[in-house]
Image (cartoon, rainbow, N blue to C red; front, top):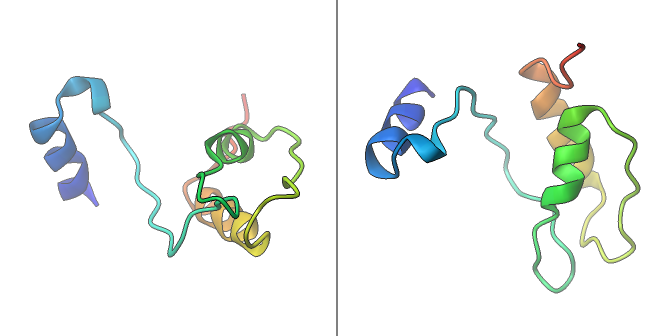
Length: 77
């Protein structure tokens, strides 16, 4: 995935710079189509979270957790 990081830095600039990428098959969304960014952030930070009642498929949160665990998230401080 280093090529993806390089492409982002070239196309968008340093404001979008990141060091790691986790590729997942799908993102957690509500039935209305909104991506659950806050929930994903809590998973990455190791914080407690509750799956919203409006989530389309709660199993996706486990997939996100697994992908982040491979990258070493949540980071222990």
